[in-house]
Every structure is written in structure tokens, then in C-alpha cells.
Length: 85
Image (tube, rainbow, N blue to C red; front, side, top):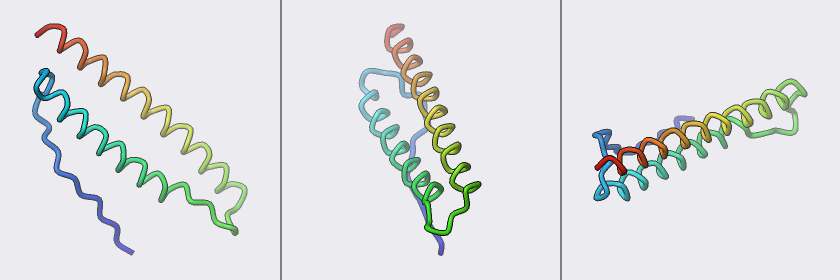
């Protein structure tokens, strides 16, 4: 089964007030794609072993922690750039 996730992303610097909404929308699209991938990776099946269930739980926790850290850094960067303009 082949799965394709495609999204056009403009990675140009975008910390201006005019581009903030567009950048935010791109960020939300990227997060949506992350959650789609996570759903594939954390599917529990009736025949999943205890080890697999444990690994799924660890993956979920680590991925969410990473996501929250990255979002925090991104928004702090946007706020700083917007404040300096």
C-alpha cells in the first residue's frame, strides 16, 4: 500500500505581518500531516504485543513533546521578528 502526502510549502522567510496568516496556515497544514502520519504509526491491533503497545505509547509521548517544543520555538521566533519590524 503506497501512501502519498503532498503539500506545497513556501520556505521563504515569512516573519512579516502580511505573511503571518499564510505562514500560520502552512504550519497548521504541516501539523495536520504530522497527525495523519502519527495515526498510521500508532494504530493498535488486536494481536499487538505488549512490547509493541509500549513502543506506541512511547512514540506518542515523544512525538507530542517534540511537536510542542518546535511550535514553541517557532512562535517565539515569529513574535521576536514581528516585534523588530
